[in-house]
Amino acid sequence: MAKNVSPKKVSLVVLISGDGSNLQAIIDAINHHQLDAEIKTVISNRPEAPGLRRAIKDNITTHVINHKEYPTRQAFDQAMIKIIDPLKPDLIILAGFMRILSEHFIDHYQNRLINIHPSLLPKYKGLNTHQQALDNKDITHGSSVHFVSHELDSGPVVIQAKIDIHHTDNAKDLAARVLEIEHKIYPLTIQLFAQNRIKFNGNQVLFDNKPLKKPLLWKNEQITNNN
Image (cartoon, rainbow, N blue to C red; front, side):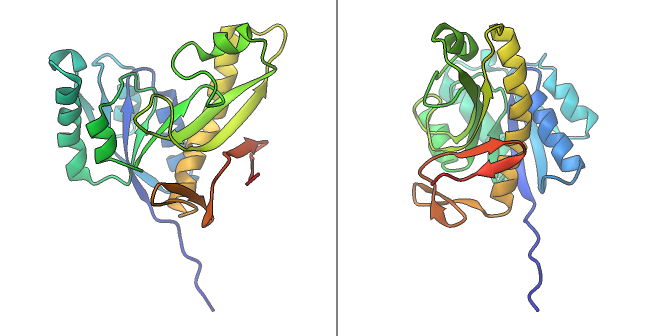
């Protein structure tokens, strides 16, 4: 009789700039045995980032690399690489990391960098996504988890989650509801990677060994595959 193969415990480095609520969602998923992962370290470019306290509370090593102390983006990224490389992480998780990464950094960690963005990509790359959705009178909004490429908020999208936009919504309302679904789909994406259900064949993302041509859709705690 074949034995069940347990998911591997993926090693993570998490990059933050602010509150770290997505970091907390990942920590909670690990602690509740919903995510087979280990956070090797948390790196912040801002010394005052509240997310650092979340990591310290969970006995996770932290590093502050203040971007203001480096003359170029490349020098800042190289300082991060010096910390990350010895840890040999499976994934580098961007969790509210508000710095544009250099092409060298992205190439160095090709197919290992993932980001979460508060829109249904390719819609609304960059900032102020919630207000843009309202201004354009969209009826749905949401969040996307994607692998990082050279172009801002681009790269293969793995999972999206949608919410309805109510006629009474403002940008703050949308932001709060989108954050709730982000806390669900980010740990889930990492777990799918841990289970080897998401992987790369060259530059093609595979889901269950088949090309992922459209993002998976998360709704009501379930994944829908429309590929």
